Image 1 (cartoon, rainbow, N blue to C red):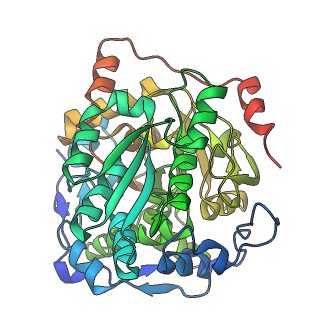
Image 2 (image 1 turned 120 degrees about the vertical axis):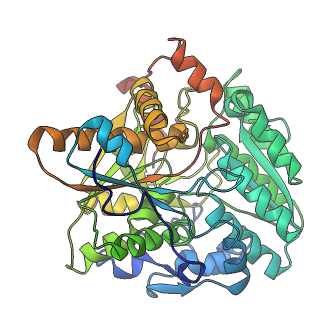
Length: 455
């Protein structure tokens, strides 16, 4: 067994919770392209976004000058329920892999939602409360975001409608039960409750839905209700901002023991957790201070970075939302109903897309479903935590990098994000263990159908 030169878990004190979020765009010399109004194709204004999003979130969405933004005291008080989260040295996994690498993971699953999503849910719910908003709408894929926002809305006393991707609602009925426990109303999407949902059902009978479909419904519902706003759990700039607490805490914890990652790895669907984890380390690169290697890992079934196009696109299937310049498979692309869950999204954060396009995110790679669950099972066996399928994409890449170190003899330091737990994903684990799990990779023809809708 390796000598434990640092504790198994590195805990920060309560007073070490970040007091400010880090705005990565402020340090980017080349900024992401502006969000466009779909009607005028001109950069969208604050006034045009206010009917859709909470006022404070709009200001954060458009802010690309202030590197640090204060976290309100009410949000900090909420964070203290589950933050700071532990940074864990994976000694047992290292031993099993016989690697000289040092593997660290930031564990974000220590709350009832079981994921990092609560970091932004708390912020957005508080801003709605502060503005006097009485109802919110949102979408959720695997259910982590819907659960997190249900928790935050229950705490701050706000009504919530959650449009949950239909196939995920069927795979994870207990997620629905948890959301309802906190007072949310959950609607499987696409549904017949909105015009967008009815059209999607008409065009794609029997579809299992997608995050793009659910976003269309949630946006329509918000725009047609009184004193209501829409909130999103990934992709947008202000969500990446809120998730920077993950990376800020990680960096502080590693500094306590004189550590710094050579490699930073995160799963990538919409991009919020990877953006949050890498934010302070990317700041070091942008400022010319350090040069870690960044890896984004996405499902082979929904490969926006690795096979998508860098183009302006809608964030939803019905074409309601503003246009964002991002790596995308096309808003009409509907991924296969596999267990990648929250990573089944057609586009990527404009921040991450720009960083990847400019070579500042060094690598994007895909992973098939069975290899991801193989890595998840290995991790559970040696580290004692059952990871979410989304998180297991990062685990797969971390294991691969550690094996490379074993082969080369390099003792690199690897940091990855363990974004959540997999205790609502037992149907997926059962499918893997029974040998019934399959891998689906879209053909070029499948992707062309999505690209056909791009501007």
